[in-house]
Structures are given as structure tokens and as C-alpha cells.
Length: 570
Ligand SMILES: Cc1cc2nc3c(=O)[nH]c(=O)nc-3n(C[C@H](O)[C@H](O)[C@H](O)COP(=O)(O)OP(=O)(O)OC[C@H]3O[C@@H](n4cnc5c(N)ncnc54)[C@H](O)[C@@H]3O)c2cc1C
Image 1: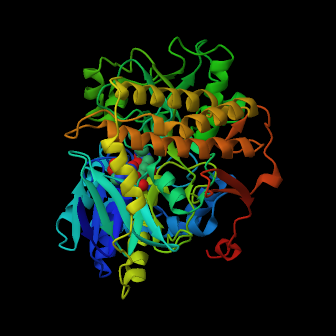
Image 2 (image 1 turned 180 degrees about the vertical axis):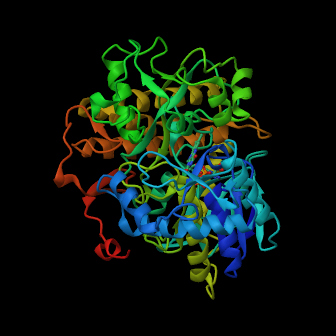
């Protein structure tokens, strides 16, 4: 076993975790940042290829309060206004700070340039050319932490649990993926920066390590989650033809920049039929377009692959080349010529608006436990605007690092010889359990496939009470029986132990999403109920969810505190 000690321990090294590490270290803390993947190379941050939103106002007048108004409007009444306002205001500082760190924001006439996106009234989405934003951002933050002597980086460490004693966080427990060595970390504060949950859906834009670990860890540690019924479905995820090595959501900026047309299998434009004002304007938000495409599919007007067409055929080759730049050659390498044929697109699970409930210092309800990035819920309400997720990772990461370091100053670590014993025992039991000769790995794989299909079919873009209830029962039963499924034999590079823990988190998180979706008997933003199609004033409330001692989830609706003075701040 390996034991480590630090002031601040950060779970997850995407944009939010790395920013938290930088901020904690510059506020005087010693930091360990760990990732089950490679530091700064796993999760969503490095996959994001497009934009990050901030009201810089460099090219044309803009103000963070206008960004806030757009965010609140898109959030359909459910944003935690305090978090949204922090997000929009401090986005500017973070983008400028990263500019100082030479991230490489695209510029015109020497000024950082921004593009428009649906729901943003100003062209405030900054980027790194061409489709390079995520990799550039990840590299920039990696460089900062590599240079920082106060930050220790650990790749390939899967954290299974946050350790809490007498209501206070004392550290965390996990194991080294390469050889299954248990690892304990004593810390004064822990930050969960473990990203989202979209791997729970069979159609997703995620990497394999986004299975809701952070949400499940927070629940088990005694923290609350909020608005779990709101995974975001990205409407025009790439469907066909085959596209290798490119972001499945890459079509978005080109669509609104160039006026890409969405048509059903009959060749008709349809978004306006569902309340979107799309034709010629391309301003319709993600929730409405996802709904419209799913309804077209349901009505039998989908393409043979089950999506709709996105066409750029009305444009000249020169226009396409000037907008797509070198991307046009990467498309050609995939056999895609946009002047000759449309591509097919359909919704995919992409992001999570819900998450761990925090205040604006990123504190959860458990003393010493913080959260950051996509793991946090509330800032984007029922629907997120393009570009608000990366910036959420930077802003909330910086805050979590700063406030946790302030909290840790002058404190002693609470870890004792007995800390984490319960978690270590169950980890050791799993490592040393008796295996049958069955191919257990396949069994874990089958459960994953069932989970993803259940979530896509029944807890996806369109939901009904009946399907949600059925799914909830099935998820509970699989979760209750997971102990009987064991990882395969062998210690070196045996990833089935990871599969087991991924499933344990995935099942609990999926159950939280399903239960919340069942309880919200209305339609709002990304949550669309076919049996309750109206948006109801009485549901303009957040839903909070927690785990009781018996391992059951309980949910309740709460009225979030709105900060009316923010509306007058301009
Ligand atoms: C394909 C794609 C494109 C996107 N494009 C954009 C865009 O253009 N603009 C925008 O604003 N947003 C975009 N997003 C969303 C945005 O990228 C994410 O919301 C944001 O990067 C999340 O950052 P994060 O640090 O919270 O999480 P992540 O970057 O996902 O990092 C989380 C890290 O935690 C690690 N981890 C998880 N569980 C554990 C565990 N148990 N133990 C140890 N480590 C763990 C993971 O390995 C991962 O490295 C996109 C997302 C995707 C998937």
C-alpha cells in the first residue's frame, strides 16, 4: 500500500482540476492532483475543439451581465444565479490570464476575436484556430502545473472514495491502475474535478472516463447533487459517413457561420415546426433542435442511419475552404466532400448541467469537500449555451483551488491509522476475491452495454413516466447485485477492477438521473417528458438528491436563492 500526504488533493486533471491546482498552489497550499487517465490528457477538456465564452468586449462592446442574461434565459428559470454570475464575470479574468500564459487565442487586428453562437447575443466565443481550443487549453494548463514545484501529478490513479470522518473530509482512497496497489491520500481538503457522465449513454461525445465518478463519490461522501435530470443532448452529433479522429460535435460553428441547413429524409427543413427560428438565422438553442430531430425520427422522417441531413451544398468550394481551413483536408481524408453531399447528424449525450451542489466558494455541504467544473451543477440551469462549459471549468476550478487553500491554511490533517479502513477493506476484498472460471470481464462489459442502452432508450431526449419507472427498477436491481460480479484474476494491467468501479459509480449516477427525471413531471430545457409536455411555473425549482445510510437515493425540490441585485448590477 502507498500512503501520501498533502494540503489539497484534487481528483481529476481536466481543465477544472488543473486550474484548481494552479490556484491552490498560488494561495500557499501543497497540492496533489491525480487522474485515472494521464494528467491533462483525459476527459472532456482535451476533446473540446471549439469555443469558450467570455464577454471580453475587445472587438465590439459587450458586458458580463449581458452574458449572464443570455445564460439565465437559456437556463429556463433553473440557473443558480450566484453561480451563473460568477461564471460570466470571472470568465473574462480566466481568458485573459490564459492569454498571458500564451494559450494562443485567435486574434484579428491584434485583438482576441470571438464568434457568435446560438443564444449569445454577442460574438463572445473565443477559440484557438482551427478546432484546436481543447488541446491548446489543456497544454497551456499542463505547462503551468508542470512548472509548479508545489504541485505533484499522478497519472493512472483511480480514486474510489473520498474519506469523511465525523462529517469532515480527511482524504481519499484509490488504487494504481497498473498494478492494483491501494493508495491512500491524507488531505486537509479534497476537490472533486472528475468531469461529467455522458458515457452512461450509448450515443455520446465522451471519452471512456466520463462515467459520473465525481457525482457518485460526492453522494457517498454525504454531499448533495442538484438537477440531475438535465444531461445535455448535443443536437447535431456526427452520425454518417464514418469520421475518424475528429470531434463528433465539430459541425456546430460551421453550421451557424455558414448557414448549414438541417433537412429531414424528405428534404424538408423542419426546425421551425418545433418553435425554433432556425432557417437563415441559426439561433435555435440545443434543447429545441435535439427535440425537433428526435420528433422527426419518431415520425418516420429520419435518414436511413436514424438522423437528419446537414447540408452545406449551397456553398461554393472557396467559401467552404475559407471557413473550414485545414479541416477541409481532414474531411477529404475521411472521404467527405461537402460540396457534393450532406452529412447525417443526430443528437448525442454531450454534457451535464446538473451535478454536485456547491456555493460560490465551491464548497459542498461536507466540510472540506469542494467541487469544480462539469462536476458542479446549477450554473447552466436546464440548458447550457455553447462555450459556457470550458469557461465553467476554468472559473470554478480557480475558485475551488483558491477557497480550499484558504480553508486549509493553519489546519491539521485529520487522517488517522483507522481512516479509510472500510474503503480499503472492500477494495482488498475485490482484489483478492474468489473468481469462478467465467469470463467475468465480459459480464461487466455486458452490464455496461445494458446500462448505456437503458439510458439512451428511456432516459434520453424524450422521456415518459412508464419508461423511467421501469429503468429505475432495473438500475436498482443491477446496483444491488453488483457485489456478486467480480473482476477478473491478475494484478498487472488488469483493467477489470477499474471496470467494476466505473460501473459502481455509473449505476448510482444513472439512478440519480433517472429518479430526478421521473420526479420532474413537466418539460423544460433538456428534460422533455412526452407525458407532461407543458413547462410548469410550479416546477421552477431545483431538485436536490442525496444518499441515505441504507444506500437509497432521496430527492426533494428546493427553491434556489435568486440574487435580484445581480439584475441591477449593470
Ligand atoms: C467532444 C467534446 C467537445 C466539447 N466542446 C466544447 C466546446 O467547444 N466548448 C465548451 O465550452 N465546452 C465543450 N465541451 C464540454 C467541456 O469540454 C467540458 O465540460 C469541460 O472540459 C469539463 O472539464 P472538467 O475539468 O470539469 O472535466 P474533464 O476535462 O472531463 O476532466 C475530468 C478528469 O477527471 C478524471 N477522472 C474521472 N473520474 C476519476 C476518478 N475516479 N479518479 C481519478 N480521475 C478521475 C478523468 O479521467 C478526466 O481526466 C466539449 C465536450 C466534449 C466531450
